Length: 402
Image (tube, rainbow, N blue to C red; front, top):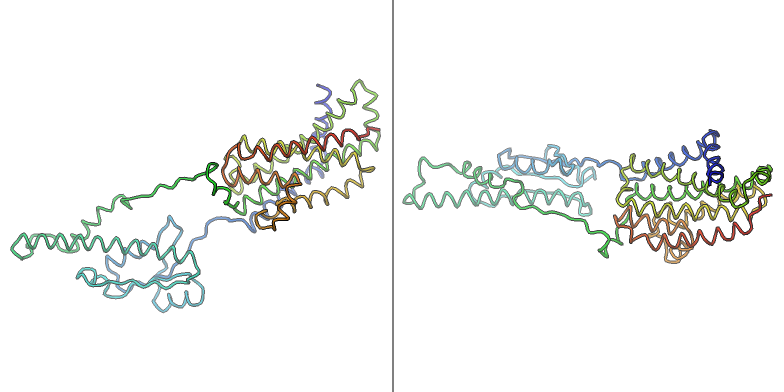
């Protein structure tokens, strides 16, 4: 076993000694993942500026402005004139605007109909979210005002139809009623995420950052494995394998060592890209570590087996070098590494099931994007292991060491 590990360790030592190869294994995958993730990913949440015209400037209108200026939702109230508010929505600079008319507070205090005007783009979900905030604030004001009027009516009826001189006024009653909204809101909603047991989990789509992190991890694990297997042909051309056969090492130990060396480089590549996606883009790679390890381990074996098979079928290193980018890129495109399989036609999704990249992306989407567990990757992992067996059987049966 020591001889096998020594031969396998040679691949890693050669990788770290060759700076150009190390840069290709490390720098290129990280740069591409970062570029695509930054350009097309979700990125940091952007604040939404909403023009608000408060013409009343009363306690009640300020409650509306405060509701719109909601830091938790990333919404900022930008105080402007009504004309400016209308202009921004009309010219598409803002999805919604809020106008509180003059006299709003007096209408609230005297029990008259008090209205708030919202102007929005009907196609904007952000605009609808702001309208819901305003509606919630309006309902709160209406409830407080109703409570204050009921209390005033009770005080008046209990004093012979005359409002007591020492009783609190409407605003004080309103403020007292508003205290009952603590905590805010007094009735809350707890949202729980349903994962593997729910059928709708299969409808969840990966965010752009997660899609690119998964896709480029699968793509570069495949490419590194295919390129690494090309080293077997190179050593055969240089006569290195022939010299190894002259040592006490058996043919099986040499082959196993070389295969293990290729797989170790692919594992290193996977670990780097997984860590990069988790740290830089916050991709939830750790949602189910056993499922991720099983998937990537099966992918490494399938990719290494494919590399061994191609190296056995190709006569020269140059032939394999020309074929590697074509095979890896084609499989990445077909398997959904560059874009989600969900958006491709049914016949393309069927073709993807014939590639290791397609099954790896299905498994990673289940566990990383959908938060599902080990049971959701068992079938893809079994298929990948089956592919690995087929590739290794064909490759090892035809692999020449000299």
